[in-house]
Image (cartoon, rainbow over all chains, first blue to last red; front, side, top):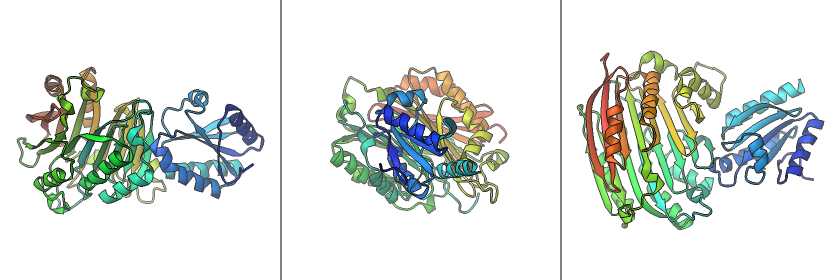
Length: 117
Length: 343
């Protein structure tokens, strides 16, 4: 399976739960990108996110299309795109709403350092 | 007044299109980012942050804002950007790539603080109108340019509006029920303006510094339902876009003394409770306490326009002038100016 160094698309609820479980088991920081095909700002940030994923193999990057996994997006109260949720040990520890490169990068750095501390 | 400085007054362009497939319905939002980037490059600005929802996409730019709806694009830029250079590429993209057709265009701006610093085609309103006329397709043939006066020769409202024959239709589109409010404020309260400066080496990035400014200035209370995308520039200056359902709002601040400026823009529906907009403007005035302020309201119904303009009476400010004019696509524009009582 292609995994490390990539943004992993979760196209079914099964794949989504499986990825979450996996992340929890190995105690990694998970960053979930809630995105939509019709959202311009999501296309703006996508290449940047792919770069981050390449640079940070110790972080799991997941991508959820809000139309594909409607129930997940509703459960997580995603209203604006892109929304980035930060998960650790199954809990939401932070969130970035919008394509904000600097904030995204800074929050990842913050949570990675607390994970390894 | 300073001899030269950053031009806060924005130029604003709105293009309306028809022919979007109502089934897919994402129209202009399909445009790939590279295409948008090229347009912005011609204007001389870049995207600093962005957010979208099911109705539209909003971009905070290095010089103001861009909003993309399925059939409408609004681009607002300040400084010495060449906004009108976006017209031709935007129309090309929409028409050739997406099969849409331009049905309306509106260009508005206030009076520049540093008019001599503006590059072509923004050297004068006359030049701008010639440029617009030359770059619009011929079927958008109902055109009018007007400079709306106020009690001061330094505060004029420049409007160019063009439309095809679709505005003759009896059936109005939902967009026709919208009104737009553009507020320009100058000579901001110095103490309040300081809040839009960053501390030297604050160790923050533009996103987090912007978020902080949104909170400490009370901008987050203007519409607490809105999702805000904000950005603080270094060493000073601030921009934000608010998205709330299908409505946007936007604020841009140039806080430097001598040429301080802030703008606020939002949309409302004619069937809204007009008290809401009055409340919103009250909060905006409180954030900046400007010495002078202009409010331009654009609406299809002159009756609503009359009602709204009568209600706009920002606290501590005195109305100095109110003028109205009618434009193609049956739109009316009201231009009001106010000065603070402390003046």
